[in-house]
Amino acid sequence: MTNQDIVKAAFRVWGRELYTKTSLSEVARELGVSKTALYRHFENKEALLKAMYDYFFDDYIAHIKPGLEQAMTVKDIRESILVMIRVLADYFARHAGLFIFALIEVFDNTDQKNMASSMQERGLDMAALIRHYSCIMKENPSQIQMILSTIILRMSSFHKEERKRGETPGEEQIRSLIVSLEKWIAAGLDLNRELIDRMDYERLEASVSGLSLGAIDDGNLIKAVASVVAEAGPWNASMEMVARRSGLSKSGLYAHFKSKQDMMRQLFMTEFGRIIAFAGEGIRESGVPEEQLYLGICSITSYLRQRPEILAALDWIRTRRLDLGRLGPPPPHFFNVFRNIRLLIEGWGSNKVSGEEEGSLDDSPEDLISQWIFFLILNMLMRRPEGMAFADFPNSSIRVLYRFITLGLKGYIE
Image (cartoon, rainbow, N blue to C red; front, side, top):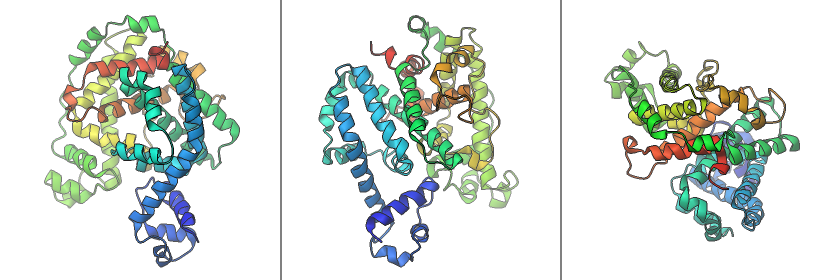
């Protein structure tokens, strides 16, 4: 048994639980050895995680470096970005375990400087990469993040479906994934640019600002659940922590929730229901489909800006891709905020999400659109400039997001 054998086993075992459990005992069990045997190679769990981090970057850079260097030789910046997307998507489609590790342990790491230096140390010229994409990063710095978020969401859905089938993705599935991902990023929903350009955004934003959240009276209980989840995460949040925060006894808490799972499910389901209802109110402010889409995005953003404790709790869906199914089956079309916006349903045929055949995913196209939009909104708000309060988040950033969703790169690059 080598260090590499242990590292690969840890990717498999811990990845199955999305790194919510990182026990050395589970790794030893996977390898059929004693826990003591692992200590001959790694003195503790932190040492093993460090080795996994190094293994990931060694493998990742070795595979993507040639492709990224090729992308930097392409003068057309739009095509250059698409080359970069193909390289990243191909790697992560073929390495599910490393993708899960990267998603949870690397990409959400706030120490971006450390991540960049890890790439530089392995021979990827980060300065040259930044120079090549400086025009888009300077004019629209959030666009790169929106592109990466789109790749992450699509890759998560792809591997989730492959895991359900119990299959290793074949060449055709990978090719279809990359083609569909390119369409998402190159053109978004592929709407009419002239119409998007002349929309009266200030009027639409004013109509949403006039909406009221209504009388949301959670008392101390739901607020306590949300704040504990925001701090500890849905896996580590306990009934005892919520009881202390709400001022109830643990037995008193069981009068409201059957179990921790029931408590978590009620929190997420209640808040998603409220968000969907609030977005529906905003959408009804216009009969124009393109305006309805912007109103829906503005409404969701407005709701979350006014309830930061809920935003922080829901952010676990973005950062850890929390599967609500683990908390029980969600209602049908739960993410489908925009089902009644006709243009999305009619216009999505050319942007199939995974594979060319109808029904290749359990989710309908409009459900997937809503997941994508919601994921991008959460990412946008949680990556706001340091020190900026949620209430001060500018509408100009919502417009940038809307333009990316509706037009993709063609909305910014001729």
